[in-house]
Length: 246
Image 1 (tube, rainbow, N blue to C red):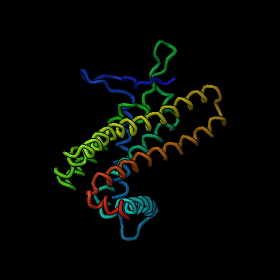
Image 2 (cartoon, rainbow, N blue to C red):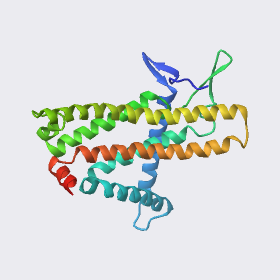
Image 3 (cartoon, helix red, strand yellow):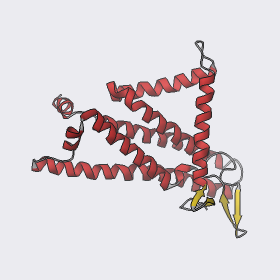
Image 4 (cartoon, rainbow, N blue to C red):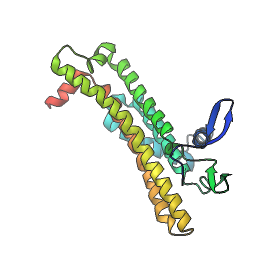
């Protein structure tokens, strides 16, 4: 059974290199190869690869625009980056051999060389931190430091209480984003590993297809929530009041 924590494969000095870190590097390389491949084949008359890339990017851009409006150009790069990284990380764990090729320890335990990065809480927590930090920096840039602080601090007792709830909400977002993604991917990998040990052929296929869907959905949820948080925190109070009055 997969360990709850990632396994150390080797160390560089005092820095431990885990199987999920190796998978993160693998995902980054895949993304770079995709970007280079698409850029090399860019042309006025698009080929199949360019058509597929434009269809995917265009569809997600329109989705972002329907929610973010005029802030789409600033928010879309974050939305697409999170989605692509997470979905490739999720699906990479389903590649045959990813969790079965590794180092045998104590003649009974196998430590896989590669393991889905998103099945490690450290990775999902890191993604959640990047998401929230980027959201708050974007909010400061869009609203100014004074209006940004007014979201959380006010001289009015009622608004001060609301501000405290907002701070608690931000902490909750961090926990929710990281644990939702980690829990779904880790649980999926444990189920697949267990089923594969019991049934070698055919029976694991439905579970494999389910994990493909779960991997897509979880990547989309993380990216969508990041987008929504960015839209909310970059909305001035005046606009929010107008929307409320309508």
